[in-house]
Length: 186
Figure 1: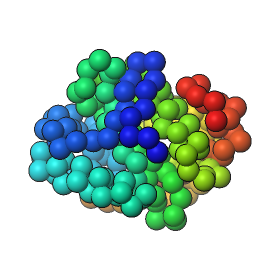
Figure 2: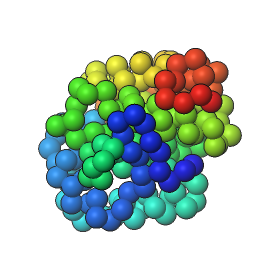
Figure 3: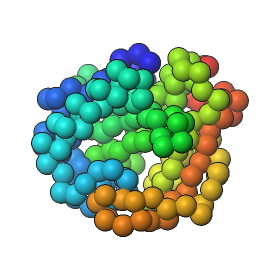
């Protein structure tokens, strides 16, 4: 995976330690942490620094390709888009976006780019994704990207919620992605 990806409006780049403060500021609060499995609440700068270092180690091992989402021309982190190895050994799409940037199509645009890069550079038959049942925003994003339902009878532990919550699991095949991705031809 390339370390820097470009879309019409966004630059996706590897995370750096100087992103930690802004990451902690944007994640703090229930709106984001509770919609993820692994982000605790509250979320401090130290949590963000640790996560960034962990993501760098995972990139080096080929297990996670986490990108800072930034607007082109402004290097300030506004969210994260990650293609990571899940517990089944599949590559899975995960993301969060700071609340001030919701409703602009940023996640869909960033995901298009990372999915295209993943299918171009990694030997993937499909990419997995999932969301908590009470997260209609992620449901809309993944539907726009062409992901198809795999299972709705699972639950996943949410660190922020401190309990298991119902999840929806989806999958995007390489063939389906070729028909739906807008950013780049595969």
